[in-house]
Length: 211
Image (cartoon, rainbow, N blue to C red):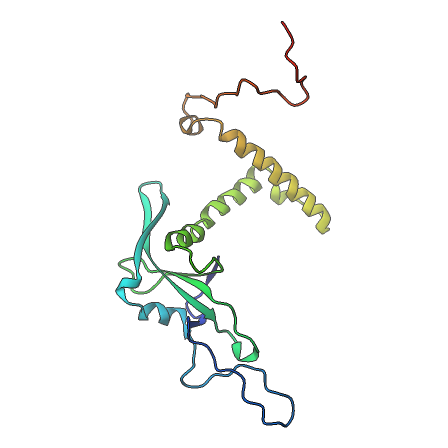
């Protein structure tokens, strides 16, 4: 899922540039796609403004600090048209996700996604809005585990440093999930998940010993 600007040009599903010219028998056979007045791309902003009211739907994706977050979205199958006249083959169709909150004079955000063609609108929205969670993860990695403290110059060293930070963060997330939400919020309820009766710590003997 990639965020794009409103000026990005796309072609609607089923509307493609013209194929290459027919070869006249002289020189190299033409291979490049063509555009004419009837086969022109449009900006994603123009496409959004041309959609019917039935193409839009309200979707909520997670609980916010005060209320559940919700907005109005539409999704269309398109082909990115940037400089496609220098190409010999059509680009693959992708999902164009558009957010246009009620009360706004124009759409506010656009995304392109390579999810399958049968994907639902709610799945596209949740993936697009997952960026907030990813940013929170990076913030904790930098502030709590020193991801941004690397001062080397080689890729291998940075790769090792990042791998260890991510492994440590995964361990902390797993440990944090053992406690109830009230405990994570700072309250005193520190209930943890029950340990299975057949659980054995790493390195311990597999056989039970009498006390």
